[in-house]
View (cartoon, rainbow, N blue to C red):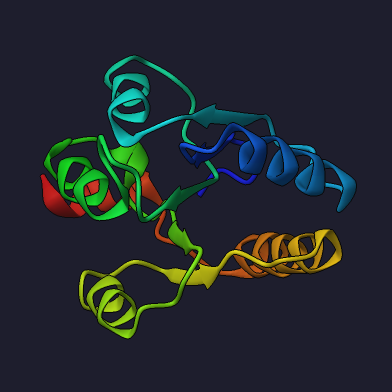
Length: 147
């Protein structure tokens, strides 16, 4: 995992994206934050040669391509730099069927979008801290194992 890689934020609500970006910066996140309005635009980013992302955060409910569809398409990309990159879902409501589905499909976390700015900052502070401390596979070693 590349700790200094960009954070990919996928959300169709520009107001939420702006608030999330501000909150990430306020909690001391120095990573570049790249915002996309749907999974299609984010996939186009991955089609090009870009640095390994640190984290992908996606809203579940986006009409054009939401979190689950994005995850399905992301799996099809044969790219070692994405192996071990955490994919986290956010949703306005924590529908238990979607929570169960997310974990069954190996999403690394699902969060209800907090209602206050302080709660948003607390959530992102916790998420960033956790993933910076978490041990992830070394992509160079993974490539040798799978070759």
